[in-house]
Length: 553
Image (cartoon, rainbow, N blue to C red):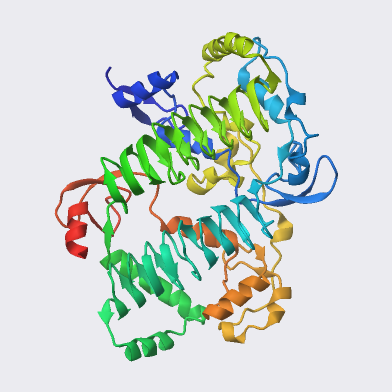
């Protein structure tokens, strides 16, 4: 084989299909893609709405409920309790495959018939305002997270407690605020890529540290300020003088720290650990994984983004899936899938293709919302023999129309583009979205009412009356409120009331992390060629593995 060069159907950019990619496609019996890797990811993410939540009525009972399907959507949406009842049988909506029509057209019709569940929540307690959430307790506006307690405004968190406005902290963080990519940290504020540390303020890449502020690249240090050692008494006096309970001071310190970090700190080229023959960023304990980001314990994979730990082996083009996935392709948000392709938000899918929102499907094709099914096509039950006879004919029909091997077209996504993760990572204007033939959600003007309440600068001056106030975001103007649990958190940690709404704070967290993209550049110390998520025109000092270890240790 020789590499194939193609022009992406979505972006018009040229991309390369390597010999390795072609061997994988041949192994799983799909034709080579017509979209570039980044365009394939954009298309998948257009089917994932985690954060846009609405009040609407249950299609079955008429009761009010919270859902990620807005009330103007023309889909059937059931309350969690109703959807799981035995009386709700998705097989009732089964239909024959029509060989005279495109598959995606038929599938879109099925999407409009089979009821969706209002939110993706599993066994959560007092955590109604969460989505893609499992085994969480006392959490609010928490997304893509599991086994946490008392978290507010967080994303992609696991085994954490009493944290607010944190992002990608996958292990045992507690009492942390505005922390990113941290593990086993306690009582930290605005810590980035820190590990096994406590009582940090505005720190980057500090491991095994305690009582440090405005520091970076430290190991096993105590009582440091701006990377300078102090006595315990001197440090505590310095910390008091910072007065981080003041919004003005907190904002200044954050800006000062970020500028200092950008100019002076050493950045590992991929922020990865214990990898062998891998490329990407935030990769932990992996082998032979390329163009991958935010993955752990995976092997022989490519084009993965934010997969579970353990991720899996021998699978490509996935977002938000994993947990021992194997031989999967173009999948989104699945738990433990095996030999499945073009599958969205399915639990334990085996030998399944072109299906969404199913639980435990096996040998299913083109299904929606099955709770448990085998040998089903378009939600219709077949015998094993009949399924194996008709499926090759369907695939050949889809190949003749150019459908097979492609993920679902974005035009049949149940969500508007700017409601989805695609908009977060691939922002487009309303005009661009409409130009692509996709849906756009205009803002609700009722959520942008000016506020006359003036937030006190210092948390010590904030009384309980703020809980009754409707605040307005200083950047977007969107309204938001302070929750009682949230106010208690700020008071306990002596932190100011945020001036931005939760959505703008989330956008800031995404902007802080390096993008899910690789560039060819040179090590800032040795000049050695490296592939990094830091583009060559960025100001950070980016070191190769060898140079980083030599400088830090």
